[in-house]
Length: 45
Image: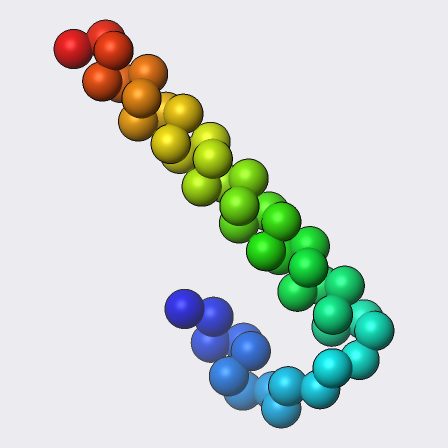
């Protein structure tokens, strides 16, 4: 999925951990929003 992460060696520094946590949080939020959009689209039909 993410080509940037594959290029760099994964080091568990505080910065990358925070970034990973933030990314996963944003990913969860995006999935939740997508689900909400899907359900609202189903209701309209």
